Length: 374
Image 1 (cartoon, rainbow, N blue to C red):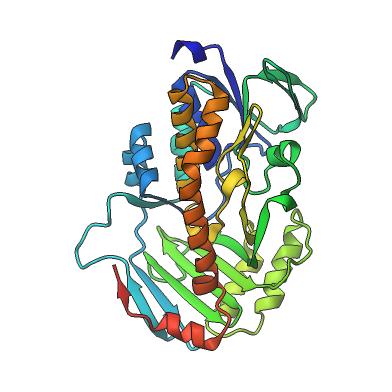
Image 2 (cartoon, rainbow, N blue to C red):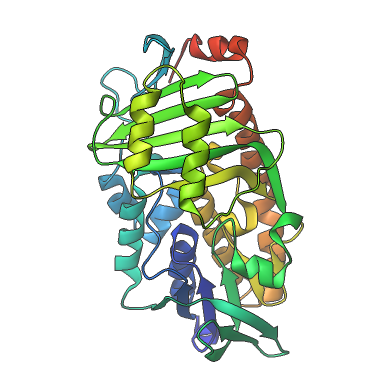
């Protein structure tokens, strides 16, 4: 696509949305720069799912088989009571059957390393830096970086997550777009199996839940709890957040005491609210948002990686269709992807209420004793 060869695009964020978007922009012919505030690509977090249309997009990107080779297979979900008795379970695989080809769970660091490897020779990566200011002109958008340097680009794409700095700079404060789902969660990953491999276990009491997800000699530990209102905390203060979980879950049944010890020992700890980003437009001028920055559905959707890939692909398809005319492309991007996003967000909202933050003993028993298999 000759007309795009001299065009320059800046992508903020080197995680799943940023890397997916960088792949497509480079493929279209843009000169791509990725800026990341951290000193390396973002790999922390629980395993991620690539499913449905995101798998089709991954095939178009030529990474599907690589992603698939690192697939994790959760085969069983078990619902536990305070005495560690399994009250019910859901089998996710039929006896001897292969898991569906278009549904892959993969460790986040594997996803990131596959994309970095694919992009490293074609895309410029700038770490330990971020966008400090944006100034759009008739012909380009001027970017001032945190280190004081300045550069002009044709487009700026914010792929910098739920607490997007690009969104705050260009579209307004997070509070304008963030919809609280009345709950909080934390994630740590330990390098050992706390339950049987390829198994997820869930334990709930009213308004509180714990999930263990075991794969490849690792376990994701997820705590979640209901909260009617948002609670004040410093999102940069990990110890304060850790104390919220330790205090709230102290004295609970099941294996909670043992699991809280893992929380105390863990070097990495992630804590955030269950919330969604809902925006009337994901674009403004020469700036577009992709992934969680634009339409986070919350981890309850299990679709973060899929939304990142789908969003990047939808934006690229629109730019290709309109031969780089970003104004028309951005209109298509806003219109064509929106029904899918709204559907995923609606499902996530239900999941928070019906799977993670169950409010009553009756709701917990009902979920625990359901008879389901896939």
